[in-house]
Image: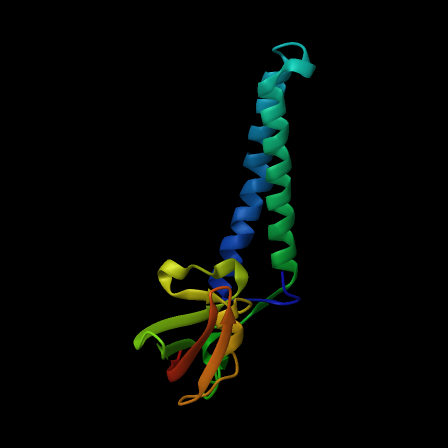
Length: 157
């Protein structure tokens, strides 16, 4: 995870609510599952107990991840975004020069990224390549599939 985690206020509130849920109801449910499995006898050969303990580990890792994301969060308001250059939370219309196809991406934090919604992470290869770009500029992006060139057509909020 990057040093700063740029989020909208809504996303930060959603993350805080999810963390609260995981710490209260989620932990209680996992404790109940462990207690149930423990009652079934020998813990050395109890697959349910092992599964519940593993689920607890995943649950605690998710809590730690959310806590780290919240601690490093910086809330960005759309009215503060300078649309003369590509920045976090800006929407960018680009043309993939190799495919001759246009795409619209919104540059977001890692925790908000969702390619199906056109939201790409600021730390992804395309996000990094577009960051700081201006309208009319051609940027080269080095991605796992090789080099790609994008022309920045439009920047908006």
